[in-house]
Image (cartoon, rainbow, N blue to C red; front, side, top):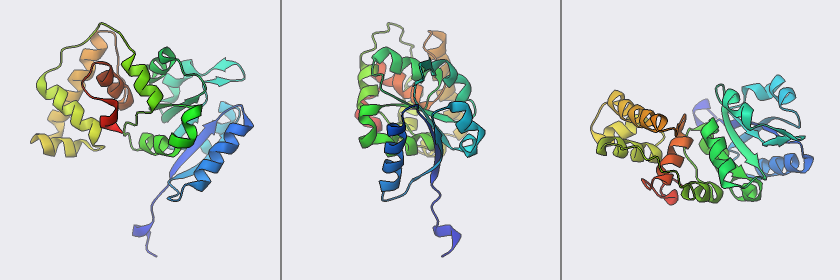
Length: 221
């Protein structure tokens, strides 16, 4: 068989201080008929996992509370080098929004894990938004009054970008250059940052759009 027919799995590292959770993740990965994920590192300590093969994983799945220590403050730094998916028993809307604002690519609650784990991690690896029910609820519950004014083209560029993983596809649909699409998305991101609602990555931008009614959660599923 030639290498052109080989589909490369998304490599993932998982940090959680509960062995039963790690065992569950391994079972979900092994049971996926498409074998989309490859577990390359897992453990109860983040520094130990990232000191081994897990440091090169496409996606880091991180529990928010490791032996009583909050990981939320570390997400911003971790997300600079890899995609981070928060995987937590915490279901409060405020926490979900704070974690996405900090730079996480996605948020998955543990009671949603069995149904959504594979899809969330695969989407994060490709910079595709994936809105779980808990994230949708958290975004729709946000009552922040700061709504930036986006132009029609900025809004259209965002909507298409949420639906397509590649900006060249957005550019084709809009009849524009990729550089111009980048400008529209960057302007929208700047406008959100200006009103105190930063959106450092695609997941956060999707969250903002849902909060402001630009799109519905089911539009990006």
